[in-house]
Amino acid sequence: MENIHILKFFADYIEAELGIIYVEANYFQLEHRLKDIAVQLGFTDLKALYHTASMGISGQMKSLLLDLATNNETSFFRDASIFKALSEFIVPDLIKNGDKSVINIWSAASSSGQEVYSIAMELDQARLTNFSIPLCRMLASDVSDTILKRAEAGMYSQLEVQRGLPSKLMLQYFDKGETDKWMVKPLLKNNITFRKINLLHYWGGIGLFDIVFCRNVLIYQSVENKIKIIKEIVNHLNPGGFLLLGAAESLFGLSHDFEQLVHGGAVFYRKK
Amino acid sequence: MTKKLKILSVDDSKSIHAYLQQCLEPITEKIEHVYNGVEAVERLKNDLDAFDLIILDWEMPLKDGPTTFKELKELGLKTPVMMLSSKSRPEDIMQMLEQGVAEYMMKPFTQDIVLDKISQVIN
Ligand SMILES: C[S@@+](CC[C@H](N)C(=O)[O-])C[C@H]1O[C@@H](n2cnc3c(N)ncnc32)[C@H](O)[C@@H]1O
Ligand SMILES: [Mg+2]
Image (cartoon, rainbow over all chains, first blue to last red; front, top):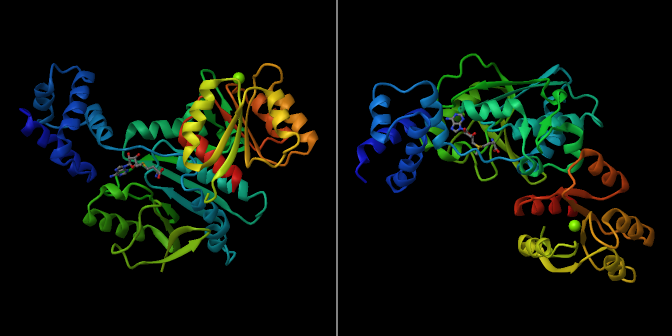
């Protein structure tokens, strides 16, 4: 690989920005993707991209580089038991003292939005039988502009809309557009705010939450970064607030600020 | 899902049968194929509990999916039925859900979609 120092430059940039590590074994793939970006931005080749990037990376180039490194894999009701736990245990636990007028929820790596819309659907369904659920406000954030725009648009292909979503809920909460796209109904978006947040950087006045979904994003981080991010989450959680991780993730060895709970097979954490 | 399933696939398309067979391999004890509603009713009428799940196409020659579903219900079928169709208009989907199909899957679909939908229906 003749461009090894160029590849290392971009790998270091990605690691510094996202904490995502490109090992040399994957440089071939990295090179391939960087060449695509060079073409998209109108550079003649990788060297020309590097030349400009070495003077500073921002704007569209930055977006494309961050998108290159992130995996946006997601689906509706990913690990369905977590969403049942939300409506059957977590929300009832938060309101058991009867003094809560708003529940604040954060989907901290929301990708194309399936997670936050699943939360909204689950809560809307739960309201049919539990009349005491208060207003729930949701913040959906991601580091990628591109994917955040998709989340906000709430428009899904026929394959995406079927992944994890029962057809009954699909009909209830989505409108079918032309060209086989399914659009989230406005009512589901009412209490959701979308915002770009890099979990590795300062979060700036996002407030306090009762529930944080931080799922399938820490897996890409070093242990030090995981600890740092979880520490920040603790600071942004109300006492007794909940943290939900991906099905393959755990807090083991990362934090002592939580107690682990299990409901219907789902594992999650409550701030001590 | 721990128990492996017995599934009847009703579809006039050979390639759908082959694709389903491949997708469902991890969860099936057996999968049987018939090619239209007449064959489906014939297969099931004296053996209503033979399967854990029926996957039913909409458009088929001789007897279509909705008619087949209605007849099977009248015969007393309890087995969950998942409709599989390239019809993707909300009215069509709604119509079948109202008539009592357990789930509706639009073509095309992927293996994780069908496995996920089946696990929702069975559990
Ligand atoms: C695999 S998706 C997970 C989506 C969803 N939480 C789920 O579990 O289905 C991971 C998301 O994390 C985002 N991401 C990666 N690094 C991040 C960072 N440092 N800050 C915020 N988001 C990040 C990616 O852009 C991607 O959309
Ligand atoms: Mg057909």
